[in-house]
Length: 140
Image (cartoon, rainbow, N blue to C red; front, side, top):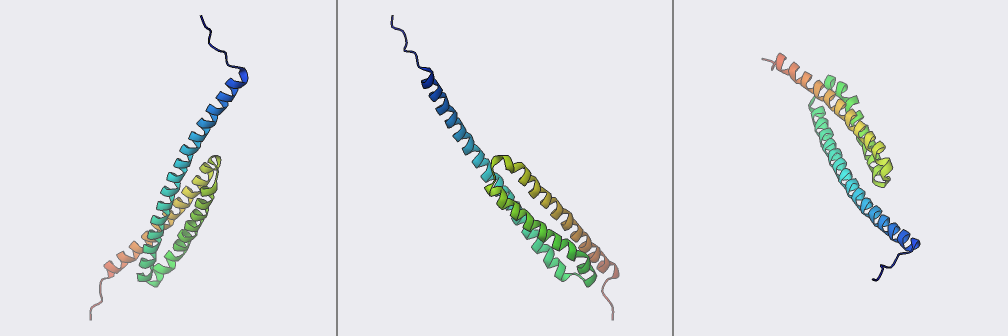
């Protein structure tokens, strides 16, 4: 009977190392794909916020001076938070996997601040619209 050749320890170690390197590369590809998906999702949400800010600015120009005065700080806040989220997005683009969660959390916080300010501007605009409908058009 022939016995199977025994592999030396260093051959086994090299084979295991090659296997773990392949596994790490596959994990890196998967993480890279997840990162691309996350970046794309966040970018799309930032563009949605840009559209909402543009719509609020249009409403702002149609509002009365009192409503404009009430809405102005919230619009400015939304623009600042959008810029912050874009900065964080760029950080996320170059971040390692271990840094994703912290940066992603910061972007989500920016979105929450924008949502709050957006609701405030809508509130002021609706309040202004209600005043117009209560008063109604002036008769001659």
